[in-house]
Amino acid sequence: MVNLSYDPLLKTDKPGMWMYQKMISDIDLPISYLGEGKTPLVERKLGNYHFIAKLESLNPSGSFKDRNAAILTSFLRKLQITTVVEDSSGNAGAALAFYSSAFGIRSRIFVPENTSGPKIHQIQKSGAEVVFVSGLRINAQKAAIDALNERNTVYASHAALPFGMGAYSTIAFEIFEQLGQLPGKVYCPIGHGSLFFGILAGFDAISRYLGKPRPAMIGVQPEVCAPLVAEWEGNKFDYQGAASLAEGTLIPNPIRRDEILKTLISGFDNLIRVSEDEIAKAHFELLQGGLYVEPTSAMVFAALKQFPHRNENLDVLVFSGNGLKSID
Picture (cartoon, one colour):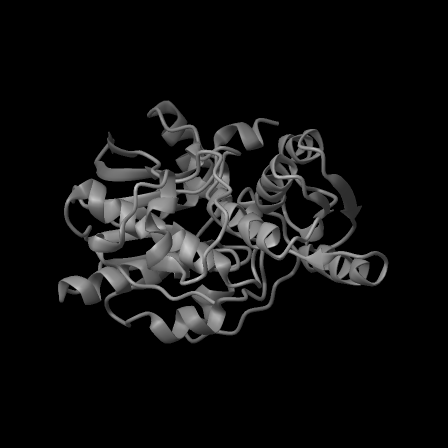
């Protein structure tokens, strides 16, 4: 379904991330464009830490999930599907509700009952039906799948469907072209791992094109729910259901687990856990430094701070969601 490559000769004059359409898929799709992609790179120095911020938080609905939602919506339109269900801790549901409504598709979003208020408000105001599900995040997924038996609909999963891989790879393409070179390290949050693995796949494609090594990939998870970090370190993982400021990454069984762990290079790439205190402090420091992102995004700065005096100007931090999504 996703035929990923990188070749500047394949770029088109289509808007936003759609300029890379021929690099990420060999399927001709209607374009569901609302402004996604071509997000800014902003150079920042906060204290002793110098980095480049990739502001995925400035996509139309406020998160990186818009890239996947745009392509997913295009597939739904091509297949003439008009009703979908999805489960989400917030951003994926907000993106799907936003895009599906804009292109005439009805959506029903199953969310954990403790999902942040602004995200719920965004989903509802986009016209989607919101169904609250008690208990762990996995319960929302089960409820969405069960709903397939109730009505004529399809499961538009942001995590399970393959379309997001190509969509998120365009982030790597943009970073490379905006910098004019490959970065040294790229820090990225991990929930299900689609964003992380998509960017990794994008840089792998660029690496093959250039004949040069890709950047080191640094994945970040909250300490209370860090299954990939535990496995990377050779430890067992047992999620106790604890809450986190980084609510978007409370995924005990990441769908992209195997792909990520098979692809990462020991001694080059890294997976890092950060505590709730580190997330809270990083979130505040970013806000004071002119970067208004949600706490899940702040994890990447917390991870960078675990390495003293990082002054490499080619450390790229991917900020996945807007601070307005967690204003409560």
